[in-house]
Length: 113
Image 1 (spheres, rainbow, N blue to C red):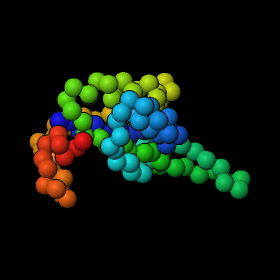
Image 2: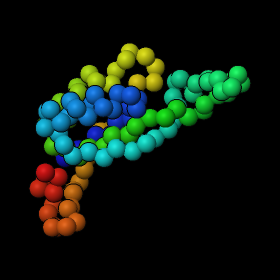
Image 3: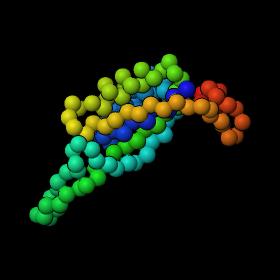
């Protein structure tokens, strides 16, 4: 099993979520995140005053999936989250040793399904 973690633009999340549901990927965790990379934050104007946002709001999407589904998930994320501009985000893939469903004690793939 693998853990896929994607840091994406907030405005791309709904499109990604719909695509995941249509492909049968239903289990995910979503968190608000903030960060900066090459874009180094952004400038804004509030009541005529310029200010700099050092950390840009993002969404973190996490999924535990079967090894054979990794490339499908990566393709979906890139397809629905890419704007071809700096700040589109990153995808991280981690190995998962085991998963345990707390309620039943099920382990491995059974706990994820």
